[in-house]
Image 1 (tube, rainbow, N blue to C red):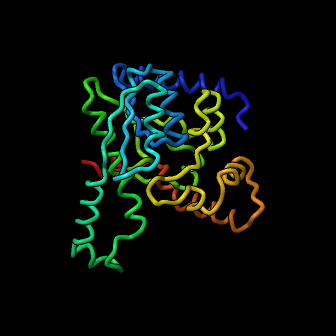
Image 2 (image 1 turned 60 degrees about the vertical axis):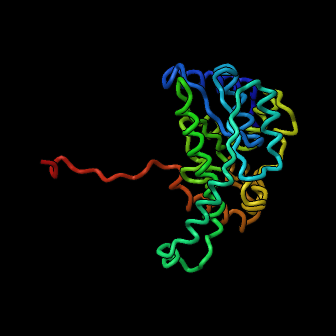
Image 3 (image 1 turned 90 degrees about the horizontal axis):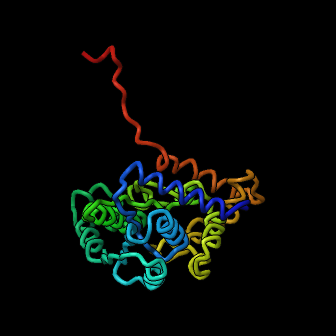
Length: 259
């Protein structure tokens, strides 16, 4: 458990303020609002650090998003400006183009787009949208990454999608710690305790992962897991997805080989 949630809130607030002081004193924080706990907590921290006039929430439904009113309610609660960009037509157009590309299909074992391709496309289009909004702001913007440590540990994010961003206030906080921060911020409980879902696949996060965040958090902190199959699955996901957390490898030319 997080020992001092309120102190952590103050530390996070100061950290965000310092980031903007060093990396864009006149910029706004640009954040995708899903109505889930992570974007809710991150947006609230940004408002505390920068003021509501310097935070822009971007709502990006893929066609129809049943819980989009939660994101609107949060923006109203925080008093921040919002932009709503429906990515549905863009996602559909790209899916159609990929699915009809004969050269691509010749490389595939199926005539259909893979499930992971379908799930990850909207996330990458959303990140493209966030950077477009950030660049359109008069004084520029910095995009908030809203991933938490639990998700990052098992790669539950889309590379160059929601795993991207300019700064990441929650990436060292486990899910239960994010929940503690949300309650310390006195946010509406229905937003903080909302069942986490990617909003793309129709399943909850825990359904797709195959274990609960409570189990994952406990394992990350203690190395303990009663179920051997779950332990093996967590370890495998962590190992396979480390590439999402590391800087892009680059070849280094030695001084001897440089004229």
